Every structure is written in structure tokens, then in C-alpha cells.
Image 1 (spheres, one colour):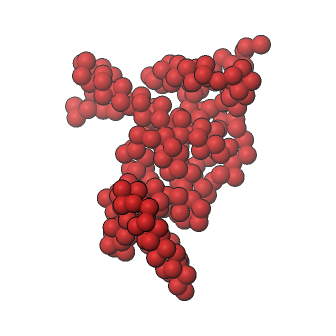
Image 2 (cartoon, rainbow, N blue to C red; image 1 turned 180 degrees about the horizontal axis):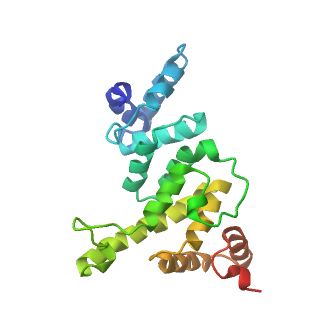
Length: 227
């Protein structure tokens, strides 16, 4: 863990949380800018950021600030930490930010055509997609999809997470993320039909030219046979 960021959590929250008011946000942002001008301070903060392993280290606003800083400064954050963070957010916008930070070392991916999610060119992103399509086991080792009505609702939560991950990949917009989104659509799993339906519903809100563009980029099942 990072004792420095744990101790600085209140400072970061006052700098980023709008509930404190613009005046206090700006005051603490100014103090932080002064700190960064100190010799070696930015390097130390970047090193400490890479040591954070506990999701409770910062508040939600603190995390959004740190993730934006990590993306702009290309700071490597702990992979397990990022995997835990993305499961805690319901906002695809923030999930896209987490994906950007987690995959920034591999965003030189140049091909949009990835046949399977197992071929996605970033281990963290590949593991995320595999988690999305894996049916969770209960304590008895049974597939959740074989259980009763209340358990089916829990499976629906998994589908919602998969849909949010898919939207986050599109919002990220890197070639790596778009290639992963296309592979996600083509992957055969229990939720594929619902994910494809979700994609088509989103497409229906767009104009014809944009629909064609997204279909060409993601190449969903069956699209190559349309003419």
C-alpha cells in the first residue's frame, strides 16, 4: 500500500470533491501545484501512486483525479487494484478511464481484427473480458445460470457489467479497446445474444452512416454476410 496517499486522502478529496465548493477546490489544487514544483516531488508521488493496492485509499473523487493524472502522466498503477476498481464503478465513462490507464503500455495495437478475446493484446484487458463471459460458480460449485429465480437476477447483474464494459471499450476508443469490443461481440457465451441485442439497440439511435461505420469497425457476427 501507499501510506503517503492514504494520509493524503483528505487533501485530495478537498482538491477534487465539488461538495467542498470551488474556492476550496482551487485552494487545494494550487497547493498541490506548488508541491509538484518542489524538486523530486512529482517523481515521489508517481512512485507512491504505483504502490497503491487498497481501493479504500482514496474517495471516489480522489480516484477519478488519480486515474486522470495516471493517464496523462503515463503512471503505471497496480493491475489488481485496477481490476477491483472497474468492478466497483457503474459508470462506463469512469470504466473507460480505468481501461485507458490499465492498457496504456499496449495501445500501440494496430489491428482492429482480433478473432477471439483470448487474443486481445493486453493481459489485463484479456482477463477482464474472460471474467465477463465466465459463468460464476456458487459455493456448491454449481453454475449460477442453473439456479432459481433470485439467482437469475444475480446473473442479470453480470450481464449489466458486461454491457458497461462493452460501452467503456467504445468510449475508450483506442484501437486496442475497439479490437477488444469487436472480439467481445463475436465471442460465443451465454450472454452473447443479449450483448448483441444491446449493441443493436444502441446502433438504432444513430444515423445510417454512423451505423455502417460502427459495424465496419466492430464487425459483429453476420455483418460480413450483409450486402
